[in-house]
Length: 113
Length: 113
Image 1 (cartoon, one colour):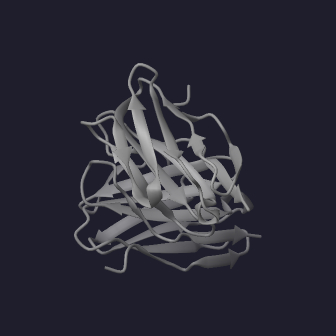
Image 2 (image 1 turned 120 degrees about the vertical axis):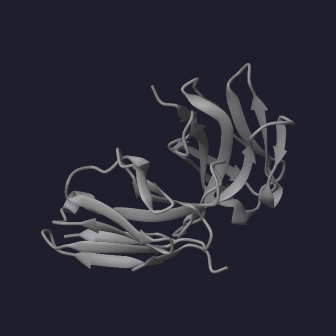
């Protein structure tokens, strides 16, 4: 299996622009997680899905952030409009079950100027 | 109060020396405990996990950890480190009754020649 796939790997954009991050989980995994990692705040869980349904979005910072999972093999995290403080590495992870074993993608490094 | 506490933010050691990375957890999380490793510019990957049973858990790359309920600790150890072990190590716990992982702030291990 190719593992969790994220695209793009790097994104540079200007403040106010829309940013869309993409994730393909490992086939057969029922859970999908979106995380954000910064030096200041560490690793934060933004939202997670079970069987394509959002279960907990309490970590989404504000209404500018939205996430969807239209099918079992694809998820997006959208930021509209983007701000410089959104600059971070965004990780997607998937899991087969509830035991905490998560498989992380390589991340998308986002820089908002 | 932080649910998972990593006591050292940075640990420098020499190659072939033993190392211990410390982690304590609070009662607000379950005792499903994990160590993840993040190599530079990569996503996190699972090193080892404790779900139940033997309190000494062995993981990949020669790492092991011991679950100590009375001290609410789950310290990570390796008897002899290599340059290639240089990475950031995250202790994590499943939030009680949830699929959410609670991560510590991370410990940067630097192995010097």
